[in-house]
Length: 78
Image (cartoon, rainbow, N blue to C red; front, side):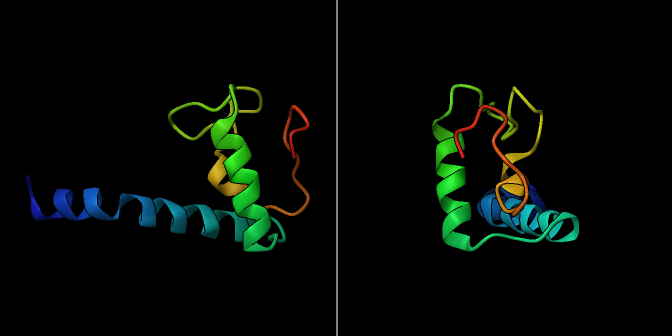
């Protein structure tokens, strides 16, 4: 395994979180981190959440959408 691959594997969650937060900050006003964590917990337990982190109902990348103040869950869970 290359050094980059090993680094990415170790830091994957941190990197994905940074990308999601950056994307959300460019698109919409952000919610409080506690609200975001609560929303994402609902998504992670949802039957419509894909392994990719996308919602089957709206297709959104939920790590980013859950930060956005004006966005809602497509099935009304948050």
